[in-house]
Length: 107
Image (cartoon, rainbow, N blue to C red; front, side, top):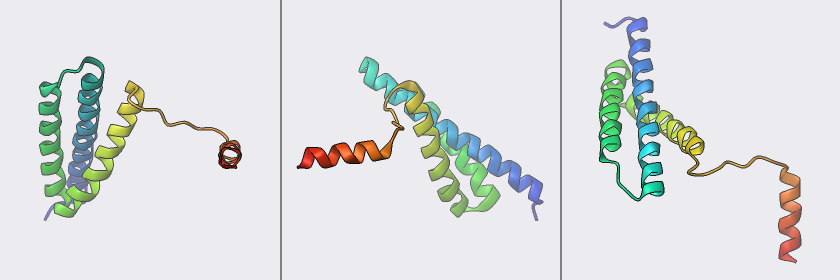
């Protein structure tokens, strides 16, 4: 029987691996968009980190941990890294002004 501390360490390392997967995929996407070149090295790093995160999460909590932890952490890692690399921008601002502008455009 594993202790709780070992399970938490495994899940922490799994989360780091999954976050790295998202960042590596975002870096490969940025390279593809900017240079037009598929970065196979970065995709290989992403797959290596995904396997590492999957093994750690599977040992720590089973297949449900891989699905739950992996999907969320990889997505967050990708979104944060892709936004910082300029692949897209999440705009914040006044919601009321944009709704009023849309209503005026429709009429």
